[in-house]
Length: 388
Image (tube, rainbow, N blue to C red; front, side):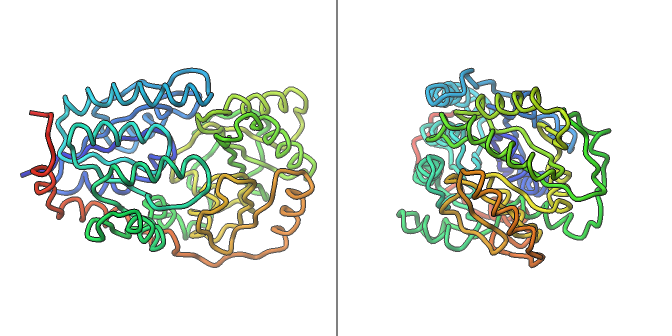
């Protein structure tokens, strides 16, 4: 019997965190891949990742538009509600044997709720991690709704078991995004032309010279500070004179403040060597990261992929404060002085050691193998199925 595996992608980071697993599932003779794309993953202003998915050779089974305008806590909650309604209809139509949800974004809990109430076995990637932000609550809630757990680290797996999940359903697979990092780890230069392949705004920089990558997202419980925080980082980087490639934020509460800070900065200072871009292919993105002097901001990329690639990272503020990290990370707070000191200190470091904390580069294969071999039929008999 062919298993129908439905993977729900809700945002651009979700795609890179599952891409190699998608490839492995697609290549399997025992599984049929269904891809559902929803939320900000469909919106151009947040880097419509559906285009990347299709260009990589995958077929999108269903598109679900669910994002409510507003970029506030209220809009996040209502978007989740809309997604529950719409995804329920999609699952009823597709009749998957397994649903896969990824990480901890607020849209992902909609996937978990819909699948759970429909009695469909739910697989959660990247559970058990501790960060300290509201994402952690969402992540742990999804863990309790899920049937199988593919953790990125040993500590994360142990946390899942401590939450009461049976050890036989918890697997340490690593993170599929590390698989992509592993593919480009030996690249000496970029395999693509940033300016020919992707559209950005601002002043193009010389990629043959040293540059920095900035990836800053609003913190949900600090969303009112998003514009101020982005302005501080923009002004601090401007004073260094460093070349910077800055990626647009996720669609979280406060993202309008981050975006407004970027637009105001560009209006005020057109000579700064800062180039702003929405989204690029996951592989190309990691090539840029590898070639950069360091990454700065508050994205988990600085802790996950950067640790594997041996790229120094400056993590600012509380968004990743409790996440497991390697020695490549320097932490600082939201003041110009603290950020400036971190930039000065990281410039003195020669960090090239590869860390396998978040995986060895073969997570996608492991995930597909477990999905193919596991007896989800026994779960199906235990649940009250509403899909006939």
